[in-house]
Amino acid sequence: MTIKKNEQYTVEFIDLTHEGLGVCKIDNFPIFVENALPQEQATIKIIKVGKNFGYGRIVEHLTTSPNRVAIKDEKGTWVGTMPLQHMTYDTQLVFKQQQVQNVMNKVAQLPQVPVYSTLGATQQIGYRNKAQIPVGQQDGELITGFYRKNSHTLIPMDDFIIQDPEIDQAIITLRQILQQHDIVAYNEAHHSGQLRHIVVRKGVATQQLQIVLVTRQQKLPAMKIIVDSIIQQIPNVVSIVQNINTKRTNVIMGEITKVLYGKDSIKDKLLGYTFNISSQSFYQVNPAQTEVLYQEAIKAAQLKSTDVVIDAYCGIGTIGICLANQVKHVYGVEVVESAIQMARDNAKLNQLTNLTFEVGKAETLMSQWIKAGIKPNVIIVDPPRKGLDSTFIEAAVNVKPRSIVYVSCNPATLARDLKLFASKGYETKYIQPVDMFPQTVHVECVALIEKK
Ligand code: SAH
Image (cartoon, rainbow, N blue to C red; front, side, top):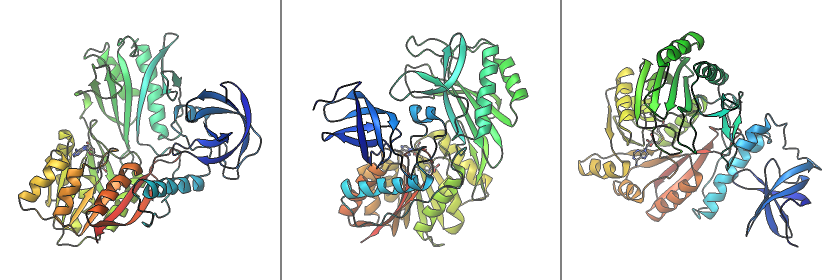
């Protein structure tokens, strides 16, 4: 049977993809469908047929799974902010654990490594402390929302559901202020217009808000009056900055940041420590679960007061600072210079003197530190999605640390790297998944690696 676009079929779902799409087969040909769970039967319409698989859309559910809950907002499925919103929370946690187990079986070929149950979040909506919202133009008005998946169509959204409601409200008010002053949205196709993105970050423990207006050019009309209106109309704003991104790119922030009000930073607290966070620095987006994640990393490290610890990919120094009082010394490395400045400030802010932070690539600095005679007992890594560089792994095992704690936001690269560690005599004791991003497919993990 040849499967045709726009035809309808009755199917039963048998599995989920790692993106949370339901999988069904028509004559052995896999079709992936949003908002579909295993064991559910449905009528679907084919929307795309590829060589090895296709995509469909639900026309009507014929049966529903007990693991299903009512959808909060179907736009969250279209734009990809809440691809798992139709699953009960327990089902989401099991799904995430299985994602990790799958890559440990297939990518790492280490099926024996225990993958623990995902540590779930108490707060499953309204948890995000940061929003990066593209701005568009519709019928002469500014709109804010998200792009439909795989498209350039901006879907207007006011309630993002997973973001802190105060951030959602700030975006609406900002949009109105900017509209009143005839600010024009950036147009991707023509590389014209003024405003590209609105970024809002909240220090949840301090209630401080930072607003970043990402513009195409340095000049933004009515800047002073816009800033005054923001301060008047949005409570708790302590920092307003303009970020200038002149390039044709889908990277949100450009290199130049201008402070329009306050400083380029806000404060937040984690595990009793205070942190200054600048607009350009990475900071975890779910503070409650960040505390859970960091506690898991610290627990895995089984720290001693004589330990020398490396905090690689340290951002603004959060992990190192949270554990510094339990050890002799912490060395942090991070590639973003302003983040390292923040990290040094943050050590001082918390009256800690046993931390050293350096700008550089972890893979380069690691070998330099070791050449300089630094002997770490524990190495903690928290790399971006692409994972560790093999030269970093090489340098790390050569210095023979007691343990390596790997904090990962991407199970696929984690598994790849654990396989390499295993080939060098370092075995993974366990993996603890932590749910930092309820309603999404993302999963964070802490892996403990020790010498065999
Ligand atoms: N541990 C921190 C940051 C983790 S995010 C926290 O929990 O907040 C990963 C960080 O790695 C980012 O700050 C990024 O700027 C940094 N980074 C990316 N590539 C790097 C490299 N090659 N060497 C060092 N740091 C890098």
